[in-house]
Length: 85
Length: 271
Ligand SMILES: Nc1ncnc2c1ncn2[C@@H]1O[C@H](COP(=O)(O)OP(=O)(O)O)[C@@H](O)[C@H]1O
Ligand SMILES: [Mg+2]
Image (cartoon, rainbow over all chains, first blue to last red; front, side, top):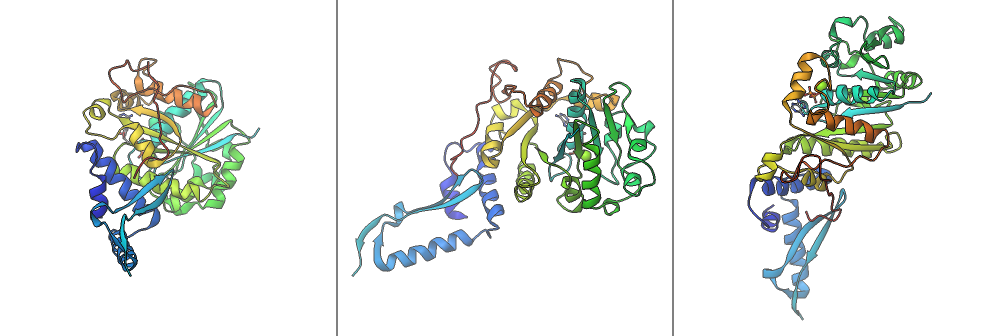
């Protein structure tokens, strides 16, 4: 959740934007029957795996969900600094 | 004749299903189409009151299903609009009094008699909902721009999607929009809700005191041409008939109410 909340805090902090952002997040979880902390733990695991092979730039790592019509897609972007030996 | 069986549903209660069923029914019948309104909210009979027909109810839907009377005997004719009939719900029974198979049979019979069969459904997604959608080939999903209503609408849409073969299409009505609150960014807009639900829009009905006035009179659409909600229901009826009617832009108050078209829907909206 934390990760997504960070991502969602985009334009404006008005009630309407907050309702919309909470709504999207809620429906993605509803539709996938996804428990609230599942995504955060997936991110941790993926980072751990990728980190065995690469040093990654944690500051610019992107990990979020996009909506395509009524489907969600997981979009991860791990900028690589160098490979590990 | 093979009419269209359209179920009006929402998940959440109190969002305007019964009001919409009554108003759309009257609007359709005013165009000359024959319409049956079916109250499937068994145990919580309402549609007869909104239609001002409560004193003329003799038999009800459960009586028909239990073969205590003929379908024609249970249909209450609206004297103001001869092509409009109501099939009332039973007030003293509960949802378990009928099953999906019986509802399917009833809908099949009604669609041989009417151009449109509008089914008003109960709140929830349990058996009452399943019964209401059993004979339908189309659905109208209603929500208000509130989070809980949108969430429940999404759940209903998911269930309708799972029955694509029976329910060929479903469209959304967003009810009780308050342009002033959208404008001050205190409420989700029509576009917001459409983006989130990713569903086709059938209509937008503003919050309007006249809805309550006409309900109290038992005369849907009685306010005439100048009632905004009434106009919205008439537009919905025309869209159901397949006519292209521009959407009224309630999100923008700068423009006059009638002058703009809602621009909607960005399918790749970011989540
Ligand atoms: N567009 C509207 N403007 C104002 N009041 C409305 C509107 N639509 C519905 N209502 C009111 O909301 C309440 C619930 O409506 P109803 O149609 O009974 O909901 P449901 O059948 O979904 O439970 C009623 O009091 C009705 O008059
Ligand atoms: Mg109702």
